[in-house]
Amino acid sequence: MHGFDEDTEDLARAIVEYARARIANAVPLDGPAPADELSRRAGPTITPEGIGGEEALRVWAEILAPSTISTDHPAFLAFVPGAPTKASVLFDLVISASSTYAGSWLEGAGAVWAENETLRWIADLVGLPSSAGGVFVSGGTAGNLSALVAGRHAASLARSGRPIRWSIAACDSAHSSVLSAARVMEAEVLVVPSDERGRLTGPALRETIERSDVDGLFAVVTSAGSTNAGIVDDLAGVADVCTERGLWLHVDGAYGGAGLLAPSVRQLFQGVERADSFIVDPHKWLFAPFDACALVYRDAALARTAHVQQASYLDSLNATASWNASDYAFHLTRRARGLPLWFSLSTYGTDAYREAIESVLALTRAAADEISRRPELELIMDPDLSVLLFRRRGWSDDDYESWWRRVLDAQVAFVQPTSWDGEKVARLCFVNPRTTIEHVRAILGTMA
Ligand SMILES: *Cc1c(COP(=O)(O)O)cnc(C)c1O
Figure: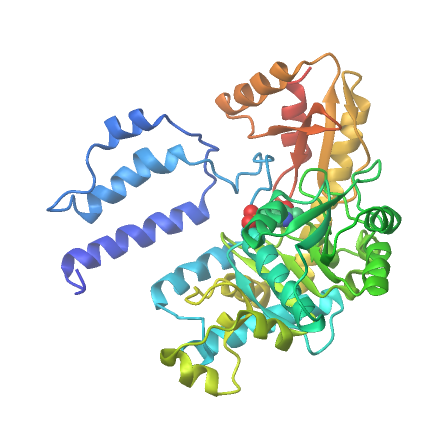
């Protein structure tokens, strides 16, 4: 199985053709089948003799792939969709074929160099100084955790003695992964109430801190694009409080960070340049395949001291001054997961990205107008970025639940309701430049 014989040659052709067709052609949305149905249809696949690559590929293509929703379908508007560029997907195949170890400079210099070029481009969009740097991790969850661990490390260097309990301030609209990171770190979360648009603001943060008796507050997490409503926090106001109190400012742009490229919304991000750490997920609105989160620190050298692993078998890596990508997050072995974005940016240029993001923003505004024109629907608020929340007058919670199942069964779209202020509402999240107003009209038509 490590040699390349005639059977491997045939399998290579079949796999490359399958991948080519998947990249070239429109695919249906599809949807999940029950586990017992998959077991029955696929039969045993892991056997002592093996079923052969051709058969395993058939099982994948005919049975398993149709039981995975196509996140890049233009009518996938649930959660946060994906919309990888053609070049990014193609290059992902190259990375898979190359056995590249991108943890250290010694082993992966070329890959790490290209990832660093990409991280520098992101740091420049944010407005971070030349001391900035970081690494690509698997997703926003891993990025938030690694950033907060670095923030706590910085705080522990700055103070004498441990607090009774470390704590992190975050808004009730912050992503669920922030609570998860706090649990892992055994840190407390000081929850700041959001304003009427779901934003964390400087005044609310200041007031919450003043009223609390936490001792070990070290960081504030702020969203540059909340997942639920796509709202950008009052970054400048939050940054002021962080400066006053010597707190680490972490800006979570996992979904919305791509908006930094778009002149029409750039002013919403004022203050982002004061971040101590920043994340954006290329697999969301920067058109890269799963999975990738760009994690950038203002002071990369400081973050390194929080994360670098020490062991005799790593001594020769740590002895040199070269850039070991592993040192900047909670991981060691890593795929060169920043390279699909690097290749795609190199291929198309940053202007193409700016235009694609602006086109998604323009579609979101057109969809908001379309909702406002329909008497049975009501927009909850004007969008900051590319998420729309709206209610269908007269609908119960159950109506929203049966609605999304109905539109998926009919293969019209994949959508998910959410809640806003305790009320179940409809939500659409746009990141795919191939989504059109016709897709939106078809979805709204199912709510008439
Ligand atoms: C999606 C998201 C995350 C989590 O990112 P994963 O890549 O799913 O781990 C964190 N924060 C925000 C704001 C997000 O939208």
